[in-house]
Figure 1 (cartoon, rainbow over the protein chains, first blue to last red):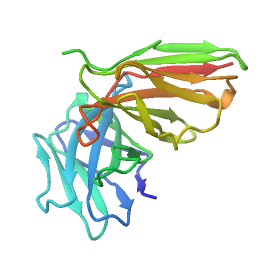
Figure 2: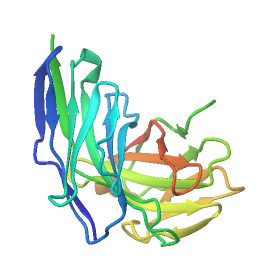
Figure 3: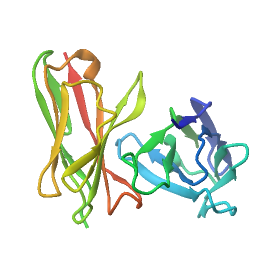
Figure 4: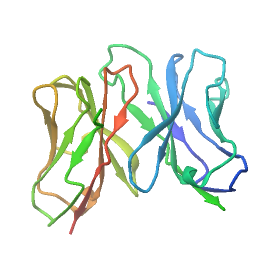
Length: 119
Length: 113
């Protein structure tokens, strides 16, 4: 079974600064997807960024980028130029890429990291 | 277009009562997922639907939990004889098919007193 670990229960950053959230995972699969989701107080989970394991290039979405280290099974999220609206709980998630299995599409989440942004 | 909707937004029930939680996925999305978010267990997968069938029920914590999906659309998660440990936020997500991104609803916060 796959596991996802976020070792930072809480992080804080000053507005306009950069912060990195850590995530490690354990899997025996070679093909999979990794995600970062944001959950603000409204509870709505919002997809921030995704990474395909077969791609060596790190994914980037505007101010959000990842550092994907497949051999180390590490998947960190960097938020640049932090904004007050970035304050939320962030979840790292894993999904198998294997087609046809009964668990196809199922997300396995880490414990989450609460990000506070100070003005 | 409309996103995933869930109802009710909040539900308070007495221990031992049955509850039904509803999820309306995005139109045309064939895959539907239920997750539970609680303080002690974090975010955990409950059940996955492809169309009306549920190939993966492995996350349902006990036989008090059941779910169905009709017409390839609306899904209902039913918890019978609720217990205090069932208190959590129940999140629903849908995707075009299982290989595509999941879009989440706002969740139902269930409190069992």
